[in-house]
Length: 81
Image 1: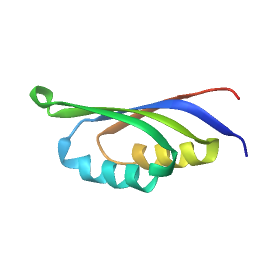
Image 2: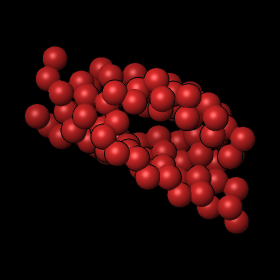
Image 3: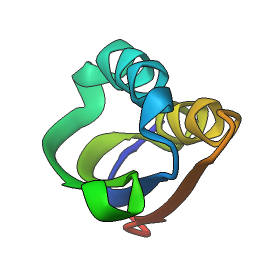
Image 4: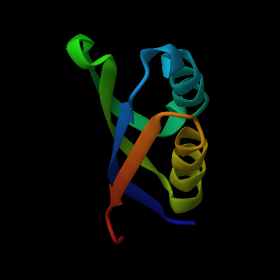
């Protein structure tokens, strides 16, 4: 399957869930090219942006696992080729 490059935006609405998110990101470290995380302490949330390079299946598997965590929102945009 062909690899695609994309971005993934993650909003962790409860910082107590950050360890679960980090565990999944560690599991998929092989497709993460870059990562930027910004804690927003006044709102008790964190925003993470990822640059990814992997197959559609790999990226979908990662975002699916992240999206199943309570109080975590995930959106992605991928190149067409």
